[in-house]
Image (tube, rainbow, N blue to C red; front, side, top):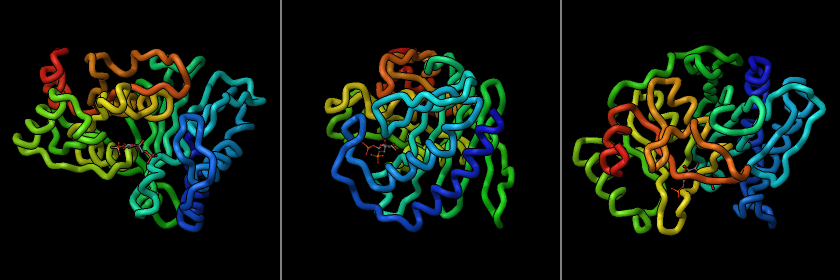
Length: 282
Ligand code: AFP
């Protein structure tokens, strides 16, 4: 798996160059899940496909930007699922965006998730990698090289609160719970990009990120294979928890469709315990 992480580090530099130099406009088509695609989404997708299609450890690639599974020449056991550019709707505002990778050993599902990684394209490039059963590792790209940086460890209780979706469409219990956290002193930190928002909670030692079911999106917005499971593995490895709204660990999810979505919550232990109480699933 280390070879896959090394390729992620290399492709990060190419994606960064694209983000800095390419047009941030839309193309006419939509992607597999009906989202509008940027020219950048397609260009990043192609870069990642090219970087991994001949990797001998990987037998298939599944991209958030494509409907079909791409079977590769490699005879390895890993299926690499990726979101090439998460946060397309904020890239024109020049906010931080990211790429997310999930490495499944066999069929994609929570129990088969063997490793994960994400890249943050902010003022600097940062990458977090994790192998299941091990601690996450954080790298920063400085002076032309990746350097291992402070370890990511979540404290028991954090201070940040980030919830997705429009408040108009939140369920009453979610509204009451989020207001309760603010009343308890939590600070709002939400950019609309899952990667920088979750990265901030991870590097600041804790807090809660929610993308609940809403009246307009009953299954939430975030995709199980490409977004939810990789971050669930990283939060658990950092000492936090990641659950759905029935209180089940996200890493126990099975996947019915490559583009399936689920409500999801990622946080330190204290906030997740509070959430379970508020949702009546403790
Ligand atoms: P885009 O890729 O369409 O910008 O979506 C980003 C995202 O999937 C994720 O990165 C955010 O956490 C989430 O959407 C934000 O959604 P809301 O705007 O509904 O809160």
